[in-house]
Image 1 (cartoon, rainbow, N blue to C red):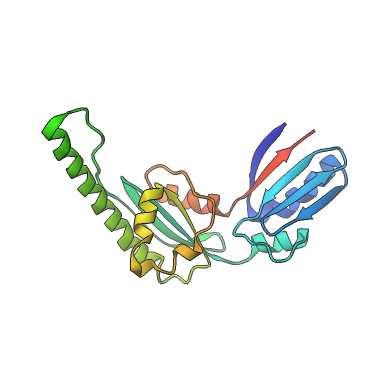
Image 2: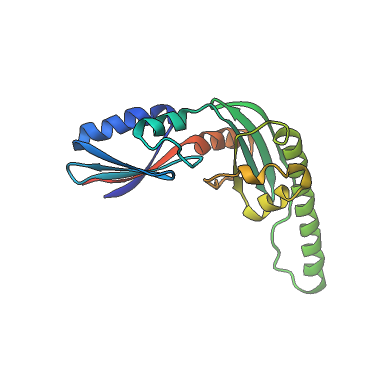
Length: 204
């Protein structure tokens, strides 16, 4: 049976120990991007290394890597809202969220549909522009180590094209987060999800 589990950095060492206690002696195959655990009973687990690459290719190196003190930026953009946050040691230290009204789709045809589409495009551009200004204010000066994004990929790309954010695209790392319109609680949860370690467990 295969399942995906999500573990906080603070719990990873204990989770690895527990896997061995449940399934017997474990061999580790460590690469810069993943760590595979193979147990005596045939069970296995594949840990996706967050914020790759992993420099020290051991279990201890993995634990130290996930617990490293990073300044993590989170950028969430959707047509209806945006959020930017800076997390240090897992704590949100600076943030801003906002919303913009962007009309939904219409079934009207002809001239009215074209006019509606233009208005909607203009509203989306205004929303993305507002998201860009927040990113410039919150993320650009934050001396980030890594940036995790979420929401709408086209919207994120639009924001990161701004020349004032030229340092940020090179900091982007997975996962890309699927989120509803960003509110403060959504942003806070995104910070937790961005730090979480994803493990694919194949249990006998």
